[in-house]
Amino acid sequence: MFTGIVEELGRVVEIEEQGDACRLTIAAEVVLEDAKLGDSIAVNGCCLTVAATGVTGEGTPTWTADVMQETLDKTSLTGIKPGDRVNLERAVTPQTRLGGHIVQGHVDGTGRVLRRTPSDHWTVVEISLPEHLSRYLVDKGSITVDGVSLTVVEAGEDSFTISLIPETLARTTLGFREIGGVVNLEADVLAKHVEKLLQSTQNGVTR
Image 1 (tube, helix red, strand yellow):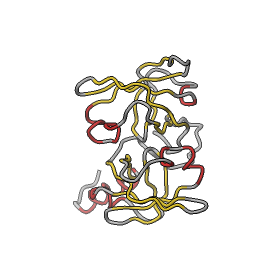
Image 2 (cartoon, rainbow, N blue to C red):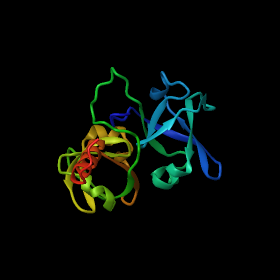
Image 3 (spheres, rainbow, N blue to C red):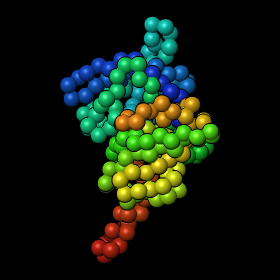
């Protein structure tokens, strides 16, 4: 589980294609301070498992994760390439402050950046919304975009807007994600649980 508060921008070092999967190696420092094999780290909002650690030729720490075809098919990791910057967050601990919202690292779908409207102190970004996710978004509700916990400014049927403060622009990939760029989306898990409970009640099912 994560909170959607990005700890570090990592850099993709190597991608080893394996047919129906790939091994992704990322250079990072902060998220590797206490990382062990088997730990979970979110990459652009995708929960991945540390399978190996190492260092680059320049001495920068790295970690490697196995990415299966299901993840490649349903997330923006399918288009990632060496040199790309990625949002990184370690899994929460009981002592972690929940600065964002409850994030599972299970991507529900992808969207595209439709519009960026900068102002003096923030940037409003409009992102396309897959039809199956629109029911989970409400104005001022929570959404995870590329692993970043954000508040929905305006929720539409096929798109939504978010407002990015300078801190978010400087510390995450959303600061340089261009129009047309693909982003990972995760809806608020609480909304999904509420939906399931209401469906059970309406169908006369109690458990």
